[in-house]
Image (cartoon, rainbow, N blue to C red; front, side, top):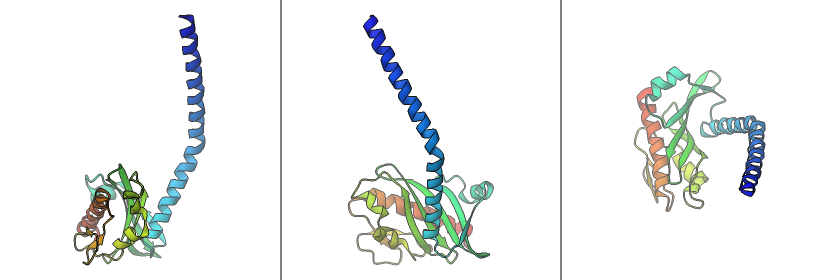
Amino acid sequence: MNETLRLGLILFLITAVAALILGLSNMATSDKIAEADRLAKEKAKMEVLEGAEEFSSLDESRLKEIVGSNTNIVEVNEGYKGSDLVGYTFNIKVNGYGGEIEFMTGISTDGKITGLKVLNHGETPGLGANSTKPYFSNSFKNKSVANEITSAKSPQGDSEVQALTSATITTDSIVGGVNIVRELFNEKLAN
């Protein structure tokens, strides 16, 4: 019994020290991680709405008014060039094959998709992870938000985007998220 108690105490001390080290590491790096995440999102805004020079997040009440109960849309930003509103960026979360996919898309005030950038995902490497590749994200550029966006292996129509081969769930999730944003823009933000 003494040996069991001694081994239990040693195991407790090892895990306590490990937990303390992990906690201290988390405290030391959490601010840096948050700052890196903020910078990545700022860069993504500039990429998906190229004409904008600065961005203004919608305040909580206006965001709630526009988004309503839709939990897929995390953040909406207005993009300005000087004092002129040039469009909006939308931070969206959808469920993909490997878990949650977070991406950002931009829509200009004239109703065109200006870009799409996947920020975080857990999709399968070589399949759904190809959603981060330019051939997929660029297929959304300059698509009108007047009509529903669909995916195709060989896009022909004005509202068709490139499908990811063997990654139907990922493609459908991102296209679905873009269509949520497209409808929201048409109903609440289009002039």
